[in-house]
View 1 (cartoon, helix red, strand yellow):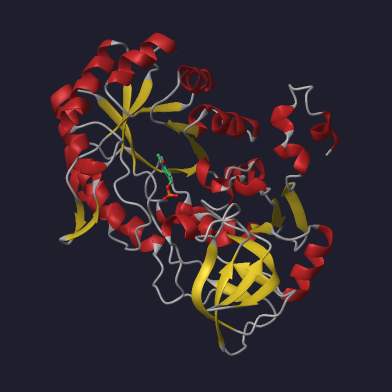
View 2: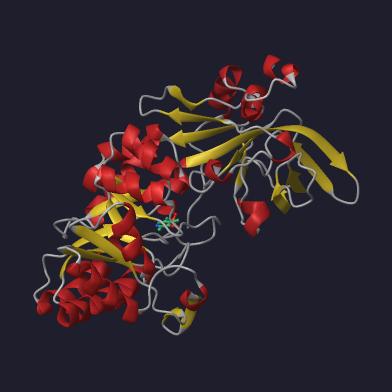
Length: 424
Ligand SMILES: *Cc1c(COP(=O)(O)O)cnc(C)c1O
């Protein structure tokens, strides 16, 4: 049971808002570092363990730098994610490149950086050879098809997912890659998203470890690492139990000793590519109530919108909300908390029990640290907010400025026809 306590007080939030107007994202450095240390502790039994943070979850070079200091690498899937990781000092073996439908120039940059390239498809063997050449160390992404189930309950549907290779293709890809000079191999799979059970990684590990033993037998390939990828979730609801990463690490260790060690593969390194589990609880969207409206329902209008945090609109996701300064007040009202997009799904909360909200109140939207800012967009001409870091010493540092109208108009800078747009 988590309580969802904001990592700032109302006073602190007001103080921050004087310098950086709402809405803004605020990340908790201490929380991020502690989480990274806990993950490393959970897998410390594995000699080569490394967490490659999924950059798409929170693409900010300051965040990547913090994670680098804690021993993490970066998992990239596009040109700009590679460029950002490189800028943050992450390159070579500190980068996994797990992309799909990959453009040639992305492959070329990944190869040039010495990143570990994870091939999503059999046809990418020849594609990579043509555009960049085959590296000595290479990874292939597996898709077992069918359903992914834990104890008979279906968690996800890999058979419907566009990623990865079939088992036969994995064998074929390994054989082709060996012929073309690859020497060391990895296996990768991402089979279920936002799992809130300690059983996901161990079950995935069992499937991948078993496959690794078979692939080694069938192809003679030297398998040096297995990447369990992302998918470890967090509890967005305060009532929901949290994953216990120490128990997860222990569960994976048991399977490792059961499957890989007897096969003489006890030297295999484990990698993860978590995004959500690493960052989601340690980022919040802070927004101010600017309107109230009483029609058939009670509405609180805030200065953030779905363009700042898309998950509720896109997936119907629950994000817990704390009204700062009213942490202990009675939940006496039922509100829809809404943003200003001309889209009726622009609602951060629907029929939510909250304390009475007055105009000017600051709302702390929890668990927005991953797949939050990064999914932002500019619909209705809405601008992206600033990203701020609450440092361990309690000081706040801007790690991305808020967009201004000039940013929104920047892609017209080729044109001389609307000179007014250059004045913003
Ligand atoms: C999105 C993604 C991740 C991270 O997923 P989370 O659910 O945030 O842990 C990891 N690897 C790949 C290839 C991804 O696409």
